[in-house]
Length: 431
Ligand SMILES: [Zn+2]
Image 1 (spheres, protein in one colour):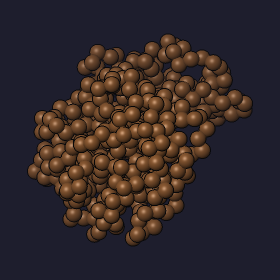
Image 2 (cartoon, protein in one colour; image 1 turned 45 degrees about the horizontal axis):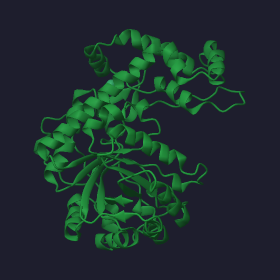
Image 3 (tube, helix red, strand yellow; image 1 turned 180 degrees about the horizontal axis):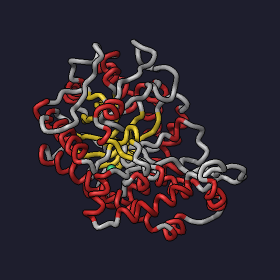
Image 4 (spheres, protein in one colour; image 1 turned 135 degrees about the vertical axis):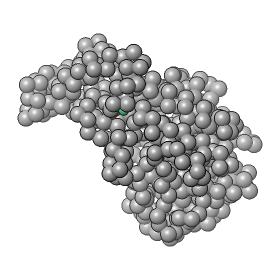
């Protein structure tokens, strides 16, 4: 099998704490990496995520990032007309350095592809809650949802458009990747009490959508403009939410109905037939996200047509968050799937990983690159990495993406190159 890209993500503090050339030496020698990218806007998440302490960092044991800071330069004048403004790090060791420039300089010097990621969130939730709660999604009761910004709010939409466009305009990157959170999916509904059987995970997730977002005034306006009877749709969804949140002590008049539903074998199609408002709501949100991607894609291409827009899939059921790949595909240049099966005991023979890749491939076609991530971090073993790559050799991926260097070990990194030899995977020369 021939692949074109092996990517690795790096955080600004990785680059501060360890010379970038030493990091890149390891990645290229052990894993044949030919593409590096900066997680340039990072959410509030303890690093490393899946282990107690760093494995490669010579300076610190662990790190707690600020929420949604931008770690590279942006022209403030470009944001003169946006209500939301980029926030940069307030920590002395990070502020004042354009970490994307640091990464790009190294990539160019060493003949590597260079990219940037705007990760799950792009704005500080606490600041938004305090100063402009309007930009956050609302649940069906009108309560703001942390970390989830509403793309139907014109202020959010404008900020995202400018943020993506300016990032590529001001930096010499080959691709811009995002795993931004879309519509809040709600919590999968659990079987309420005393029932022995496992709930069907797909029905449970679908029903959970009514506990997610967004029900804000901007969504209402957009939905009406698209031709939906918003008020009737929300009224029907309220009744369903009443069922979905029932317990013996809350909405208990619906508790038996929920218990019977979750202990039944009703299909998702059955639930949608019974609640057409849920179908309409899913469709409205998919149209909203497709429109968002169209806007961002257009904004990037107007600035630099050659820059690749890559979505980093992290969702088990993307369509429940508003992402319908068949509809969004025209506005994506490539997709990375961030399944990290390797970091847990592998009980399914990598079936979930394979199924997700096939789902995305079916939607984006064979001409657009599809990259498979795998976890080169503790809990994985070199054998698991080799087995995973052996599976990937059979599903026609166009590249790999390592998640993440900050928790990796040399034996795990070396397993990439070893598996490529074992399974006859060749990295195509040139970018
Ligand atoms: Zn909304």
